[in-house]
Image (cartoon, rainbow, N blue to C red; front, side, top):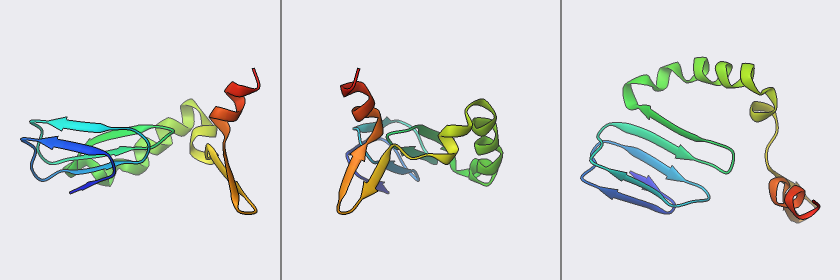
Length: 89
């Protein structure tokens, strides 16, 4: 199953989601691949039950990654915080 800008070649039993970039998978089976503006997750489908442990590890490294979103919505508009920060430099 693929959602977003995804190209799969010789890939079976995988779930691939792309939110902001092109994601390609070649010759890999039974994976979960999730791409967002903040991070990319690649995991075996049999390991998705361990996701809470992985999020805890990420939180230990950088708590902001698990608490804040890059995109902020205000009264019908949205701002990408990473783009706004780069433009102000």
